[in-house]
Structures are given as C-alpha cells and as structure tokens.
Image 1 (cartoon, rainbow, N blue to C red):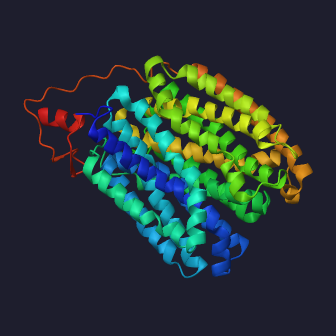
Image 2 (image 1 turned 180 degrees about the vertical axis):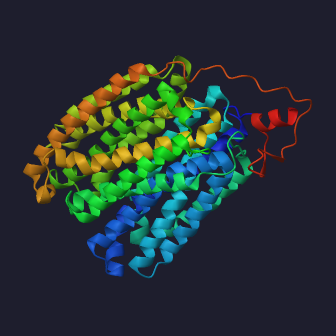
Image 3 (image 1 turned 180 degrees about the horizontal axis):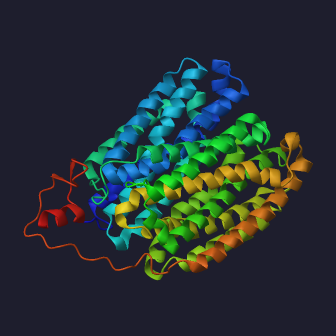
Length: 501
C-alpha cells in the first residue's frame, strides 16, 4: 500500500530522497569555493576552472530527461540508487584526480550520476506517498534539500582550509553510504508497467544531444560571445537535434516523453511557469552575488551568506505551503508567489553602493524567500500531479530539464539584455545600472508567470484516485514491485493490483 505521512517508512523515504537530492545541490556550492585552490594546486587556467563547473552542468542538464524515463521503465528506486552510487564513485575519482583533464572527465561522469538521481528523488515521492500527502512531502523535500545550497559554501570553506580541495569531493562518500542504506531500507520500488521495456534510443540520444548543445551554447555565450564558431555550432546542433527529437517522439512507438502528457493544459502551463520562474532565479541570484561583491564590497563568503534568509524561509514554510496547496488548491499560491517575487525584485533595486544590509538587502531577500516558499512546493507538486502517476519519472525529468534550461538562458541573456558588457562586472557604476535594469525585466517576467497561473486547474492536487483492487491477504514485505523492475521491496498499490488480477 502507498505510504502515509508521519509513519516510519515515510520519514525514511523522505530522508533518502532529500539526502540524494542534497548531494547534487551540495556538490555545486562546495566546488565553487574550492576552485581557487584547485587552480593553484593543478596549475589550471580560468577556462579549465570553468569546465570543472560546465562539464558537470552539461551532463546533468542533457541527461536528466532520459534519466526520468529510465526510472519509469526500469524502476525508480533502481535508477535512483544507481545514480547515487555512480555519483559517489565519481566523487572519489574527482578527489583523487592528478591533473585537470582527469578532474574534468570525472566531473562529467559525476554529472551523469546527478542526472540519474535528481528526477528519481521526486518521482519516488510522487509514486510512494498517498495522493493526499504528496504535496506536503514535496514541500518538505524542497525546504530540507535546499539547505545544502546554504551550507555548501561554509562546509567547503572549512574542508579546504582544514585539509585540501580534494575533501570537497571526498566528503560525498559518507553521505552516499547513508543514502544507499536509507534507500535499501525504506524506499519501495515502482515503475510504469504500461511502458514498453524497450526505449527509442535514437530519440533519447537526440533529446540528450539537443539539451547538451543548447546548454553548451548558453554556458559559453557570456565567455565567447554570440559570434564565436563554437557557440554557433553548439546552438545549431542543439536546435536540430531537438527538432529530430520532437519528430521521433511524435512518430515513434516508444517515445521518451509520451505525447499524452502535453494534452493536459495544467502540465503545459506548469512547465512554462517553471521556465519563467527559474529563469528569474538563475539570473538574479548570479547578479546579486556579483553586485554585493563589486558594488558593495562584500567578501565572497559574506556575499554567499547574504541570501541565507531565503533558504531559512524555504525550510520553515515549504512543507506548510505544500500542505496548504493540497487543501485549497495550488492556484492562489502560484498567482501570489511571483507577485511577492516582483516586490522583492523592486526592493533589490535599492541594493546599490553604500546601501546597508539591514535596510536594503535583508528586506529584499526576506520578501524573495516568502515568494519562493509560497510557490516552489505547489509548483513542483502541480507539474507532477498533472501527469499520470505512471509517468512520474518523465514528468520530473521534463520539469527539471525546463528549470535548468531557464536558469541557463537567464544567466547568459539577462546580463546582456541589461547592457552589461566586457569588464562591466568590475565597474560598480556600470554594474549597478545594469543590475537595476535587469531587475525590472525580471519583475515583468514574474508578473507574466503570475498571470499564467490563472489557467492552472485548481483541483489538480485533489483529483479523485480510484481505490486499488482488494487483496485477499496481506502481501509479504519482500515482493517484486513491477514486471520491469525485478527488485524486492515493500509492496505498492501497483504490485497489489497486479497480483489480484
């Protein structure tokens, strides 16, 4: 049977998925702090340091959709656990890397592990919990997993100063061990039993290549410029591959993303909304850290910690926000959240040279945190609930891929649209002018997202779910969960229904 909130197994499933997702989040922020030490130790140029970050990002963004589909077909717990173990193994290789080539290669491979575990963590919650508790579970996941982004710079700084940059990667190993134990002990297996076991690998390859091409173009655009051959080729390859991907999905027998998912208006609106909101998050967070350091003179650690209230508010309010959306419907929060973000963005225009933290920065980040806490859990729950449960992995993969693409696009385009060029990042006057222009553009985007939310089905989280067929007698704990998975674990509604049949 499905898991209910407050039980021991529910806490175990939450702990496993939060630990797994936290690995990917923690790794990104820890590595940022370690970059100067890596450069000094391995004698690396700035481009080499960029690829330590970009290689990981490319693999993660390009494969997250495929990973979601693999989880639906071959078992969400299985793919999630493979991702966690793969991530840990590559973390060890990163920590032992003897030159920059090995480190970048290991980071690319580490990104594959992150892609396997990221959509799986949400798909597990969607498939394991009873419908009435899913939004609350996703809210708890959003708040607690986000702590990794706050503690990453602090933990990374302490590890690097206490020992070596290598510890920033090796610290993942005990976390991986805990996550694997929790997954084996508590997480039930599930999959989409209606999906064909085969996968259209040509379509999957086109999808991955398309996302990789666009990601590479967006990552390199600010560095190389729009006319650089590498950027142009990557963009063209990405667009052509995505066109071929769409053709294979509409004509193939085993599509990676079933077309029926896009027949649901709420699913489409939730993902367009995701693109807009995460575009704002990606662009504003990047520019905020730069503005605090260049124009207000903050040291790097202080600039990173200036946004701590955002994560604290997410931690305190996300589960409550998810529960409220489950009770009254998500539409009101999806409309209100972006409007709070718009107010926060207008308040951020006061973050200029000479402004103080308490009078300028703190009110803006508090309002920003309230906006995020209002919308993130309902948005994620809506994007997953709008798709059939059997497609939970694909739905999570689509939503993750869209969110990351939105962030990447904003990081590349928003500064240019705001008039920031060349060395403007080091010029407080030019940076502040571009910063204020970018905030106005971002505020307009959030208002557009708020209007979009008016079309969301307010009953999407409370739709009636048919009761599973009765089972003559309780099933033992160690049973196979689905025909495709062949893994033992606590029974689910899906396996019970099959046995009854």
